[in-house]
Image 1: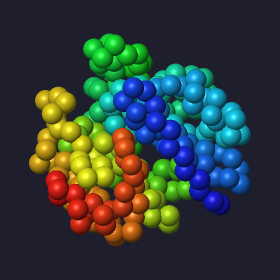
Image 2: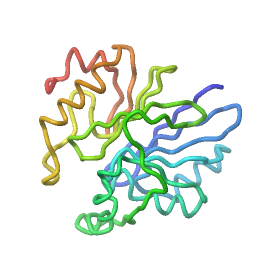
Image 3: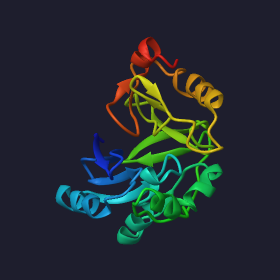
Image 4: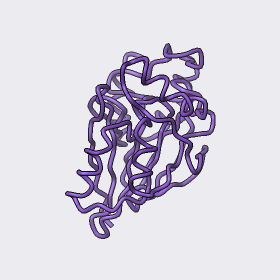
Length: 210
């Protein structure tokens, strides 16, 4: 197989929704469909990608606010994050209203946990639990392609916020990054929830928060 990856910034938060597909079968998965669902559906249709999976890294509305609508439109189940973010997924509608935006609450068909193996675009990804930004935040790691989807845990030159609710924990986030991401080799690339991608090595060398 040949794994293809596309990044689509969605909503006013410019959240990096990730589309992964196998260009042989044209079956694919979406990670963190935060919104702009009609645009995502149009993109899938024009690219000829058949959606087979919808996955969520954590329960914030800019990452999961469009998951329920996308699932209804395609008949594809929603999976993840860790169940510790259930309370956030159940409050997305209210959270969106506070920003003058629209999102729908979401109840995943299945949750994920540390050590699970999921399939995104035909490729296997390891699930690692990385709490701190939210209690149930997870990251997805493909070792064959040395590629990670890290949501709002780690950014180029920065880290996830921990001041968005009483559940945020800076020390826990740093511990998660060190144990679950900085344990990877330097040449692993990652895409994050907002902004440009980076590598583990670059963040190890230059990220001022680490």
